[in-house]
Image (cartoon, rainbow, N blue to C red; front, side, top):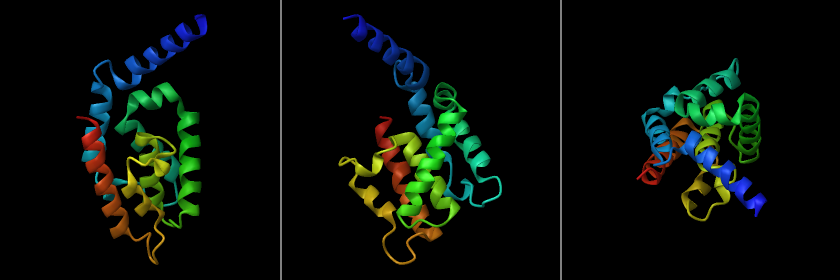
Length: 149
């Protein structure tokens, strides 16, 4: 029972600091994500990771603070690696996949509740075009908007 109580305490700490007791912090982060246009995502190699850390901190400062910068950078590395194996080859696509991992969870691509995510695999030739990335990002913004309701 002590382990359960300890786990409950940790979950409630996370909820209060990251989600908000009424999910208000999450809803605010979703709103900031929706208001961040694809064109504003980092798109070049020099300083990409630092710029993306800044973007994520601007979107969801509570989650970044709770997780710590090291964990945020690890998420970026993991998302970029996933993007490369999904045939995404530009930095805006890397940024998109990182934001989705950050907001939906690192295994969002395997979530059956979001089947449209398979479009992110960019399996079609030229699938990493800025136009396709912008389309997927818009779809993600719409989905996130629904999760905040």
